Image (tube, rainbow, N blue to C red; front, side, top):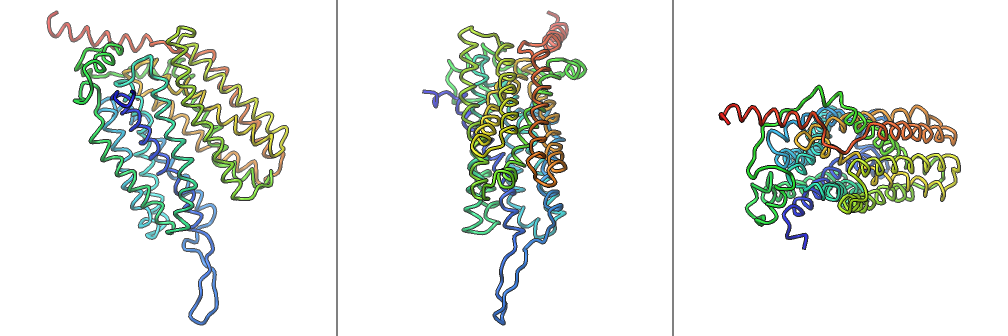
Length: 457
């Protein structure tokens, strides 16, 4: 009965947290269509005029939509550092709670001027930037090594659930209650989650009064720490930044995010202009790859843990096989989809290509917990911060290439993405590791030796 295990209550609440992270991130993508569309108004003399509530050019809309990432990229490493100092659960909750409050202010900011709206979105990105690094700090306290993959993958599935649910629901809210309702609805839901998070979730099993003695002992012992231990984490920055395992993990994160954001931002346009689907069909089809990715993410998480528990694969083999296997499948599907460029086969190829990212996530995304549990949040911040650059660059590159939205232009976009998958696969296969790194052990041993000297033992 997993619902009686406190660690899976934390997983479920983190799942809902990531659901809110992505619902607060993507709701503007739908609302901005209604905010800038031409509307018909009847004047007193009986004539009609057309005007936009917000007369923003496409370039201004682009700045509004991308402004979130300007803040997001700067708090990745900071989020990991703060999670070690103040507790992963505390920083994770505050990051989402403040973003929820800012979301409630979005309609007011938009009416005050586009500059205010961009400022609010940058602040949202700053606070949401801590969430993924903080989640690894949470698992370093709550996840036994034999359950890391499944716990992290189940929680991360919330991101895709948030994307898949928010897009159509935002459309319904806009049509029924107006564009402002999108921000009020998801803002209130996220605020309610934050209150529940504060009441239910604790920093570690030792701080949770509701956890059973047996479960607490199991988690503490499998993580090789003493009950109640509060270690002052010292991060070996030089060794981390020069570690091949960390570099390969960061490049793998960049690789996956390049493909993810290329299709997230460009797939609806590609389906409409090249494959001939109408806007409603494009919206529905665009959600399918991310639905598959969320499903495969959970399945692959259980499979990864099972292969380790049964002794069929080592941790390093699991990380490499899942990451590189996912990348290879993605690049093959990208190449086939670009070469065929026929509606049904191409949609199938693109769906599989994006979906297999869920398999790759169970390799490189869980990797920080293997390399250095104490510094997992910071390592995740380093990797995710580097990967965010792909989210900024890839849509710009695609935009410059697809000026005419021709078949050859989109083929080139797919071929570039496939080439990046090749690079990511080769580097992670050569340098990737699932072993506790020597620099992590050295720092821990140095700390213990220092404590022994100070106490005279």
